[in-house]
Length: 347
Image 1 (tube, rainbow, N blue to C red):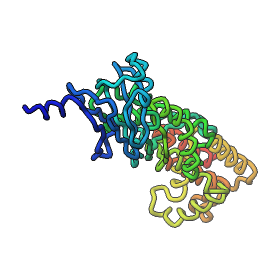
Image 2: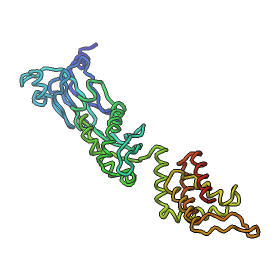
Image 3: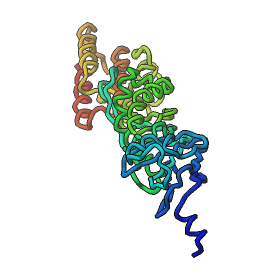
């Protein structure tokens, strides 16, 4: 090896990072056995920060620009090494470059439903996902909390930790927003802003600036979604009596196709609400109607097919049918209630 090559290997005059990969957040300058020449030039490009580290301790930090390395521009390092102000010898130091470029399109999401308190439903379980962006703001904190003396560090290494940080704190973020679950879908922008406020100090701990936080979707587990749909449907019915009257009217043309005719349909609908107050009211109304109506024994010539149930009972049976369709009772409840309804109609 020639003497010129030996000198180039031992003394470094120009220090820079020609960053090619946007995903690299930190890169350690390869010193090996080399030493930095006093008066060497340090080039820090836009969207970069350079940090000098002495024996694991962060010393001087350089922002974008062209810097001449002397004891005047390296005051912390000079103090750590106890250099004289006129120190002019080559020296060794670890140099780390950090990228401050904005990291866009980072995804977050809840792999499992999270449980939240809600003023309408008391407790709900939901899933959510979206995107966020961030950048390094405090290289010293990022070095101390995340990278350490690794030769390099990428966004793929840090983002799983950031996603876990988001998911573990999203419950408190949504709770602090004060937005009821039913209004979350219409206020995803507001919720995103609230969650950003919650996450910003958590990111700052690692030397990161949370630039944007977006909530793209909020969803419920399938079983809970069905319960919400049922509640919404009941609310859309408006006047339940009119709704059930409509259901019964629509079902009358099909009575002949069902075993037992209209009476059988009514009994089947009644079974759908076997344990509620509506069933009790239906039986009481049927009993009162029978007591108020004079009992007339028809002669054989006057005998007619079984009369249809009273209109108010039919309306209630429609309500019961709607509840049956929602699967709120068992087959045992069905049979028991059917017997009670038929008994009340025969009295």
